[in-house]
Image (cartoon, rainbow over all chains, first blue to last red; front, side, top):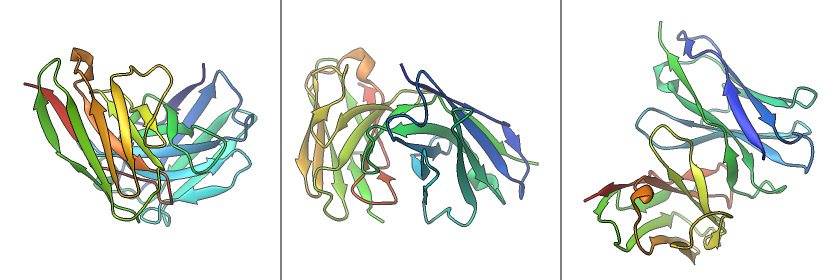
Length: 122
Length: 107
């Protein structure tokens, strides 16, 4: 059964860079030609798609975050990563990694990781 | 961007009730719509995809319908474990966008 697990610092200072890694287990990140995504959820609020990466490295970002976000993949480690720079308190959120459900970019998200809370504060 | 609007934002219901949640897209998305259930402190879980297809393992009391701009999620007979927040999401075009959520509470 495919499982995803987010990891990274839970506290980031304003203006610094948020970095998270999603480790995939139970399957290879490069098999099946799947796409992999990051989604965030501010405390008590709704869901926002951040971006998606193909196992080969092609990326798709939310225009609202595009100038600050970078997603990369490391197939040898079976991981993909998120970097968000110049963070502010508005970036405080639970960050989820997820897999697109089919090998098409036009697909819903399933499964999801359990989420990682990142707080931006000095 | 395609805006997704859910109604109601919150809903109180009793075990055994039939409940319907609506999701409207700001432009046509064919049937490229998914529904998720999220319980407190948990990640979203996929329930429905392609507007009306049930994700494997999801109870048959959940159903979805609609196409174009108007969609519904129906729970035919509420069970205690169904009290949660529900989100719709369009995957017709990028950026992917979600509805604001509907919180289903126990009456």
